[in-house]
Length: 538
Image 1 (tube, rainbow, N blue to C red):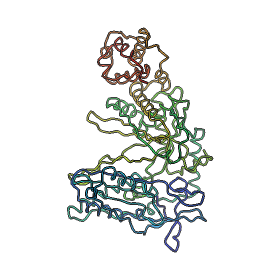
Image 2 (cartoon, helix red, strand yellow):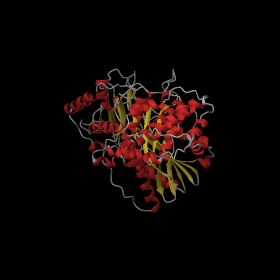
Image 3 (cartoon, one colour):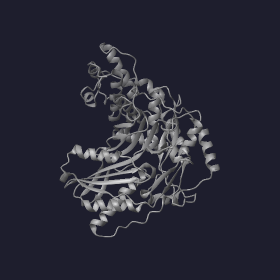
């Protein structure tokens, strides 16, 4: 974030920028002591419907002019190893392009967007934001924004898009926009003494000490991946059905857990079930806007916080959720503690180019999927190509409305050249099984359930062995020893939620692809024993 001006500006108008931002990877000092920017926040919105393109371009320009942080310039004092800034530079001027008139193909448009989203900033000379409006056709328009992370976060992105929409609607209506003057970011930043910070750091270090600063992931790494390739990311998602979602959130509510905490619990449980580690430090992004005065300020207020989550040998799902809630509340209280200072105490040998303390991130995804520009013109956020990621895994948790009800969506961002995509999808499948267990067996021990996920080797060519395998899974899912071979699953006490769990268990134990429709067609133990007699698919 742009800091409080606790130091007098230099004669040419620059003032200091905190060293912590250099250390946290927003800027990196290379071997030649040159300040190198490392992070961008690109946004691509595609609007469907009629758009007044000159009015949209003018609205973007107005939004870029009115926020001090979007006009900032930075420089490095090499001798003192500090960054300085001022906010009286000229803003970037948005560009209006017409791809239809230019005759661009879709590939050429994509190349243009990719170039804009990845081009670095010269923060000493240029404004830290750029924008283009690209007319694709009479009914399709792209708005491409790219802002440097040093003055921009996820909340800022939402604010900037809201500004653009408000300014556009006012322009097409021929009225003056109703927007207040945004305060300077420096005016809303609290200044704490070094003594207070040191005391907070010591408390956090004491709470986190003893936890591993790495996480064992059940994913095979590709050897000899270059540093640039290691940052290229991809995303995979699993969506939990509405009934399971409702049960998961009901169990979580009894422990006072938010959807974010549910995501942390599912991740910790799945990592513990699939690997040797039981104690985890998990990073998450904190908005850093506790002061209401920041509500209209575009700036980099977001900080990275670390939460400790442990899975004990006797912990039930209720215990795990309660522990995650406690760890989360402790982390929230200390969200303004400099993570680099904590990392220096707990992991002094870490590489400054990698995330401190944890290679895994969990965030609640609350970003709007649509942008309402005006009546008849609605935008949607386009996925970024390429996508960059600095964590080994980033889990995003989202509760989304679907035609059949509210669903818990879990998506994983991962470095696509580092990990095998199949491994990532298998891990997502394990996350889904954890969600089903939390919903169905909240009183059971988390780690004991993991032993049922992998059945002992069974000769699936032996009809008796197949039959006994299916019987054992039915007993587990229905929580009863009274299982008949020729009575349907639903007549035996099953329901749609337990059927989802049965699909997962049969597929995991047999190595066969099992679909829900298959079990409707083969509803008994005997029929399902025959179902898994085919060739293995895994």
